[in-house]
Amino acid sequence: MRLLHVMLRVGDLERSIAFYTEVLGMGLLRRKDYPEGRFTLAFLGYGPESETTVIELTHNWDTGSYELGGGYGHIALGVDDIHAACAAIATRGGRVVRPPGPMKHGSTVIAFIEDPDGYKVELIQLGSRQQAA
Image 1 (spheres, rainbow, N blue to C red):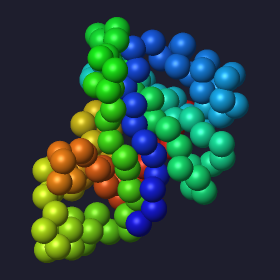
Image 2: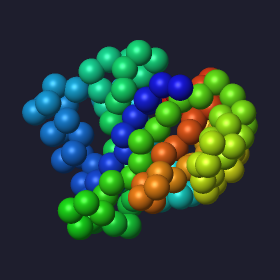
Image 3: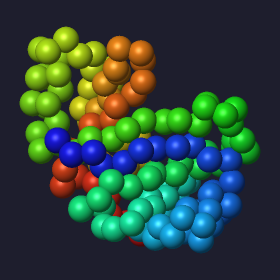
Image 4: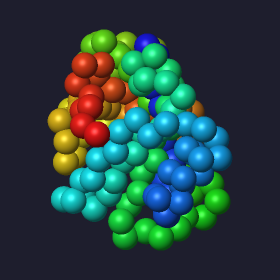
């Protein structure tokens, strides 16, 4: 497994992209609109996703702001075999709350587990991630 990204929900995507690129010096790696789901994903970081952990900014078009702390989404881990990873996690007492399958409005194969405090951890099948800009 490898840590892929940390996801934050943001109310103003352009303002957030400007902060992470202009203030923190990250590059905008890719961005994609999902009109059917009314959201946009933007991935930013200091190097290619294949080599570094990045930040995923999620902008839900109908949400202008979040309570501080309410915008946290999840951390994401890349796995070679998502079905085997979920089975192993369940065997070790982990709770799979969203079984493996394609993401809604996309084709990337994902699953979600919960840590003991209820925080979400996303598993992403390596090689299935959409690389659209």
